[in-house]
Length: 417
Image (cartoon, rainbow, N blue to C red):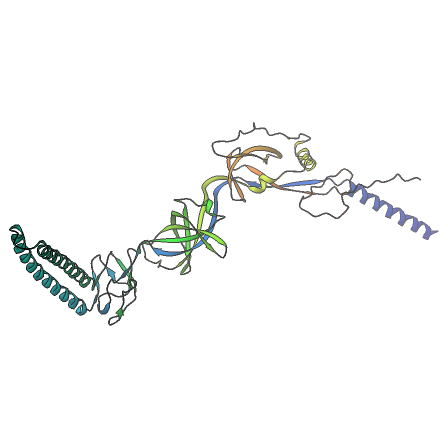
């Protein structure tokens, strides 16, 4: 008898515990929480990147127009030179010989002219008196004119050889610095087919430029006077600044990839940048500083209606704010903005707010109107509890994959006792 009573008591206790657990779980209410972000000021920057090569703004290759042996070199690598300064001198011996030979030709031609002129003058007087034949006079006149032509040709050759002699001395055409010296004393240079380069001179290394290659997909975002920052491998932690000065229209094709050359000025007052360095450039396509920003997550956020109702009812005793209290903001046409809706937290309730946004970097939007610094906007929502009670609503992420067939409706038939 006692065992029977014990069994009955245990069964009643188990039923009571199960009932209390059911009542507790069944009465659990849904809890909705919203994550918010505070509106602050900041900077929006959209950039594109490219690589390029540093060069001096003006580089001159100095050569020679005459062949010969380098007799003397007066400068070396990195030498500072002035315009008109003597850089090198060729052996002048063969050039002087050519000049003397041409001078002798001029003297010979002048003597011939003098003789033919005297003959012409005599024949001219005789032909006037008809004492000689016309053919004899014509021959004398021809010889005289031919002598004049020979004299002119000899003088031209003399002038040419004189100029060639002056070419034996190589002078700097600009002020600058010697980047390269391609010859040594005693070396023979030949200028028969092309002008050999003896020196390479850069005019000013305190002002340089970067020639960057921009992909055709990005060239439409580059414009003159655009701000650029670049780094070089020699100083990886240091950023150098410049601006776009030229966008060249000639395309460059390499392996079926089209690029365009963009020239960037690169001030180099400390002369730490050197010609030929590779520059990794960042072009600031869009850059706005000290503007009001709203997270892009807040612009894209749309709350679940049931979850929002549950939250607002629990915080406002049944009062639901479904419309913005402030009047809708008109589209800012002058600023080029567009109208969007965000959800803001005012006090204990969540309500929508019309705003006008401008540029974006995909993380933040510029706020043109509708929000002020310090406002709180909703960026996400989570819902917990209420799983055992009929009618509870759970906020689901639209990006969460679902089990196949989970959207099917299940019909429960009443149980017949």
